Image (cartoon, rainbow, N blue to C red):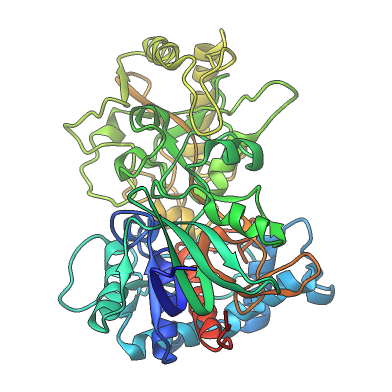
Length: 551
């Protein structure tokens, strides 16, 4: 057999998990090769917000913020497995492997970040707040209102390498890339791994590669670590495996689920396929970009504005608009028989919100004053707004997205305007009192902090009455993924497991290409990248100590 490349540890991918695995391998003294399917390294992490959620990290402890292990594990268990969570039960009601993964993340997370820092690969800071937090240290965690969340400030970190400027995700990945390149670690781009090479005894000893139409092989003397991202760009997989109707993704286009197929062919156990990390996006932008939405101005991470609401096709509010995006986006998945009332939602705001001048990171689909992207609809009356929305839906009719479409049932109800009038009247009553009796909007410190500027005269900063007259604005929203988070099941050291719980020799995984240790949960800002860095590093370290596999 001809080998075109060889290294002790071959790492597939070059995003956050892969880069952390590579740093760990190099630090352990073995040779490392990274194979990246895309034209440049960095992966989805490089275009993300660059935050990483790490419980009990040393930076928060230096600020006097304690994050006790029992409470942190309860918080993660409740968010990750809400239908199993029982604080009085053994392992908090979770299966032992799932519990052990959460415990490993808590036990090793801070140490991993400290080690990456000491090596000079990361330069972490506590991700700062944006001016409306009760704490001067940071914004509250997304789930600050849960009783298990006894330390909601300081878990979210960012990377601030000296002398490097750019988007936060770029700063996160580039400092690790620079560290590896300074040590002459090869990162080969446009190298898509399409298969694994096994010995007869089952040991993984290399990978098959496609590179500009040619087939190549890379030998892994000790192990292969897959960290290739999810399958958000594989429409067949998204349709068949994801539980929600999705319109697009913010992940890089190389995420087609290759490792899912490869690992299944090797006999790996598979899990968490129905889950992802979700957000809301402007579906007209998704249509224009073939489902690949990375323009943050077309993503509703936050629902900006104090007089902004979300309604469904019946003109009724359907969710707490200020909930964290991962939770809020799942309101699109509601199905009542054959009716999917929330499949698309309509974010509606008034002129006061449109003219709010504050530069706020979570404006999202609400543009700065004086600009009007093509996916924003404007009309002088509510009836005219509804007519314009229907016209936009008709223009999208029949188009297929990631795993959904603007099918005949996606149209405004004949009573939409009447219901919308009643909805706004009811909302305005809640805004006057500061108490949302329908969805408890503004009941948490997170929701009030992420509100940004507000005209509210109550303690609830998230609501102000909507104007009785136009103009009004709207965007058509659908659910999308930051990425999927299902795939092969791994142990606490990143080793890929068979259904009987035994490990596949020489095969490790980390990041969004595996069954996420977070399960259904998104613990906070950086809830994707935090586990990716930690388990990527642990996988790279363990892979470096695998015995050499003779051919």
